[in-house]
Image 1 (cartoon, rainbow, N blue to C red):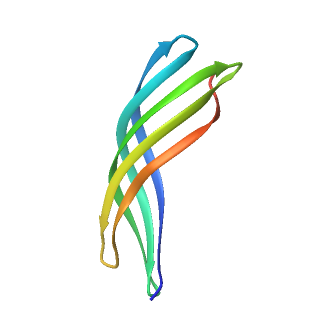
Image 2 (image 1 turned 120 degrees about the vertical axis):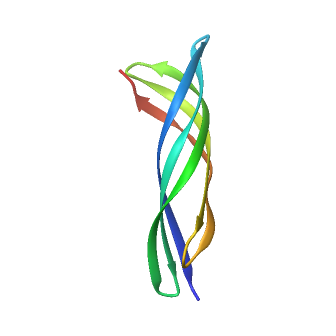
Length: 100
């Protein structure tokens, strides 16, 4: 029997920023709707799983944007007809984002 699950999280969070020298430290929390596509033994299903999101990061202003490093944790659980699994988990991200 083969099985697969793909999760696409869509979230919205409230974020608080605090300046610290030339950096900004931020944290926040919010909600997610996780689109979960499962396939087990040839049967497929798409579910929407509610989740909670918590995040924290550090950024520094650079020209028309900012460099950032961020970690976030999301929770969620699917108890569906063809599969039971936990969704969410830890995400680590870093990069540059546009910020006028």
